[in-house]
Image (cartoon, rainbow, N blue to C red; front, side, top):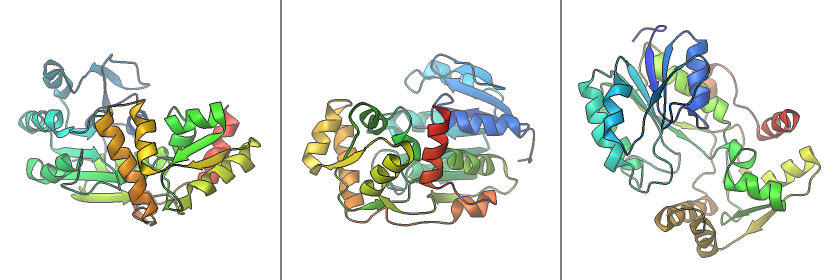
Length: 282
C-alpha cells in the first residue's frame, strides 16, 4: 500500500475512535468512506450507509476501498457472527488491509471480539489489531462513567485497587493512521496504553483537582457492578464488563507500553492533560 492516496472504509465513523481516525486519514490526504447507519456527515469524508446487521449495506460500503478500519458493533457479546461474514466479503471485494479495534483485555481467541482477532490473519495478508487499554474519554465523554461524574460526582467500579494505563482516543487514532497506511503492514496486535497506570481513586482525585468538583470512586462488588451495567445494556454484555473489572482488580491491566510513542514519534497524552483539555473545551 502507498503512503498516500489510500481509500479507507472507516466503520463506526461517528464514534470515539472512528471519527478521529477518519479525520487523521483525510488530513493526511487519504480518501475516507465514513460508514455509519445514517451516513452521517464526517468532515472531509464520503458518507456511506453501513449497518453490521444489514448485509445489504456491506457491498456498497466496500466498493472502491483498499483498507478497512473495523469498529465492532457496540454491546454485542458475539460480534464475530456479523463481522466474520463481512470480512470474507471484504477480502473478495479486494480489501488488502484490515485494522481491527479490540481491547487490551481481550486476547486472540478470547471472548467477544477475540474471535474476530483470531481469524483476521487468515483472512488478510496485511492486518493489525489495536488493543487499547480503557479510554480516557470514558470519564469525559458520553460513557456511563462520564454521566455519573457529571450527574452524581461518582465513579462506580469493581476494580478495587487495580490500576489501568488509560489511553486517549486521539492516540489510538494516531496509531490507527499508521496501521492503515504505512507501507509496511504491522501484521500483529498492538497493545496501546497511556504513559502511567492509575487506579480509579487516582482518576477521581485528578478530576477533582482539575475541575474543582468533588468526585469519588464508589467501590462495588463484581455482582453489584454487573447489575448496575445490566440496567443499561444486555445482561450478557454487562457480565463481561463486570468480569473485566474483576480482572483489573487482579492486576491484568497494570502495565505501560511504548507502542504509541514508537509508532507515532510522540509520547501518549497523560490523563491530567486530557482532563485539562476537556475542561477548557466546556
